[in-house]
Image (cartoon, rainbow, N blue to C red):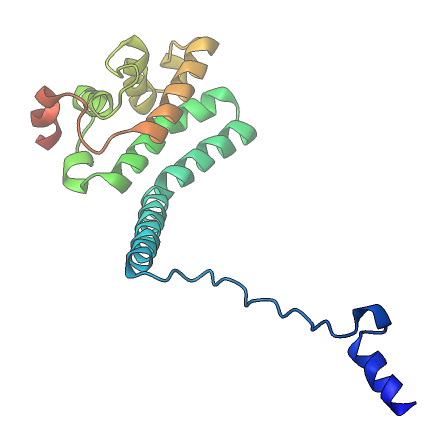
Amino acid sequence: MEEVDKTFARTFGNYNLHGIEEVHLPESVSWMPQTIGWKLLFVLFVLGLCWLLYRQVRLWWRNRYRREALKQLAQLRLTEDAYTVVSRLPFLLKATALQRFPRENIASLSGEPWLEFLSNHYAGPAFNDALGQQLNTIAYQRREQWSLSDEQVDALVVRTREWIKTHQDFPTTPSSISGVSGG
C-alpha cells in the first residue's frame, strides 16, 4: 500500500501520468538591457528628461511675477468697479516691468518713453495709439478728466492682461534697443 501511495504521489494524483516528469519553466526574461548601448541610451534619456524638467521649473519660477500680477488684476476686476480697475493699470504695468527689467531702465520712464517701452516689449497692439495714450491720462489726471468709454476700459484691461502674459525680455524690433537704455 505504501508503494501505491508513492506511485500515486509521483503521478500528480492520476495513474495515467505515471512516468511523466514535471516541466520546469525557464526563468523570466530580464527587463534590464544586456548591452552597454541600451544602458547609455537610457542614461542619456534620463539626463535629458531631468534637463527638461529643470528648464520647466526654472521657467515657472521666473514667471511667478506674471502669475501674481494676473492674480491681482483678476482680484481687482472681481472686487472693484471698472474705473477703479483702470486707475490701477499704470501701477500694475510698472510694478510688473520692475520685476523683470532693470530698475535703472524702468523706474524713470513715464509718458511717451514709457508707452514706447511697453510697445517695444510686446508683440500685440502698440501702446502708442490713442487707447494706450489713455494710460498717461489715467496715471496723471483725475477721473473726471478721463474720456474713456466702457469699451475702451475693457480694451485697456485686456491689453494690460495680454502685456503681462506675453511681454518679451528683449525689444520686438531691433531699432527700439536705443529707446530702452534711455532714462
